[in-house]
Length: 212
Image 1 (cartoon, helix red, strand yellow):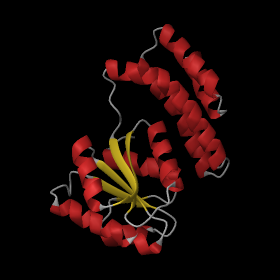
Image 2 (cartoon, rainbow, N blue to C red; image 1 turned 30 degrees about the horizontal axis):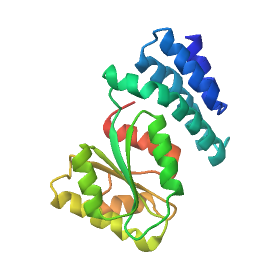
Image 3 (cartoon, rainbow, N blue to C red; image 1 turned 90 degrees about the horizontal axis):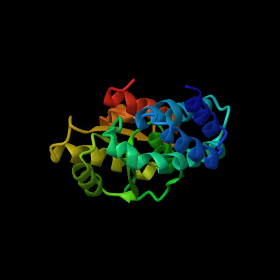
């Protein structure tokens, strides 16, 4: 549908007011909220993710596109809830205990939202107890942990161990990322997934929840 394509293209260009206007127009034309989300907003964010992965665009462009997506979502969110459209998954994301860096984590949160996930942002300096509390409270099936310091990486391991002790191992999939983190370390501590950047994190998350 041409209107949904226009929404996607305006989002890619980062035109927040236009995206909001077009989403409202689509709503007025009785297009299903789920279709506006998947074929308009998510389609646009998928293109942004692909371009970001190929280094064709950089963080500022992603942030501008995300702002446009949020403008569209402000119109759509109440309608999605009312029409029973479910998120593709629920993910708790946070920077681990002792680590106060959040730029990468924030970018991952935005990309996840753009892919249709319900994101619970746990913030920075998160203890295992905080992660577990949010996972239980929100009934989330995914946990994303970020670290920028090698000294805080062991918190990832202790959190995964705590998940086991809390009876969540197997119910909650874990994924990790951050500058010093590697696939080898993910394998070593028993994480279910590793992503080197925000765009790849979306692919890993989709795989872990079984969404194409």
